[in-house]
Image 1 (cartoon, rainbow, N blue to C red):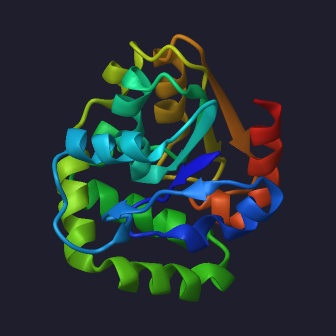
Image 2 (cartoon, rainbow, N blue to C red):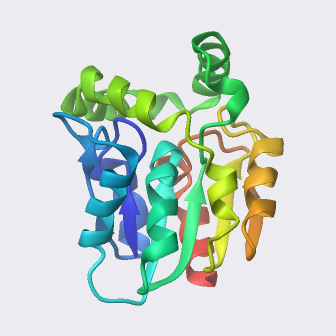
Length: 205
C-alpha cells in the first residue's frame, strides 16, 4: 500500500490506518512538503518514481487523488486504487463555493483532530498549499478516469460536503472498473477519523 496525503497533510493523517494495514507514505510539495509546487504531471512523475516494485495498491486522499490519476495511466505495478474524499468538484472551484462547503464539512468533523490537522498544515505551509490548489483544481479528474485500467474504489463520508454524493458517483462511474463506497457518519478526513473502515476496504481489494 502506498499512500499520498491530502492538501497540506502528511504521514500523521494515516498513522492509525497504517497500524492496521502497513504501507508507505509518499509526501509531495503541498502534501507534507513545503517549497515550490511543480505542474500536475511533474507531481505525478515524482509519485510514479516512488512506487517501486509491484503489485501496489495506491491510496489517495482529497486533492492527492488528482496526482494519482496520471500515474494510474502509466504505472505497470498497480493492482488497484482507493480514492478517499476525492476533489475537486467543478462546482467548488470558486472561493465562495469552496469556503461554504469547507465550513460545513469542518463542523461535521470530530474536534479532537483539530490540533493534529493544524500541525500538519503548519509543516507544509500556506504558500505550498495555495499553490497546489491553484494547479490541481482546474484538472478534469473524471475525464482522465475514463482511461484508467485498474479497479478504482471511490470512498466518501456521508457528511462530506467537499466530496458530495453526486461528484463521488460521477467519478466512480467514469472509471471502467469503478465503484463507490460511503462511510456512514464520516466527513472528509476518513483515513484519519475512520481508519478501521478504510482498512477493511483495503483488505477487500
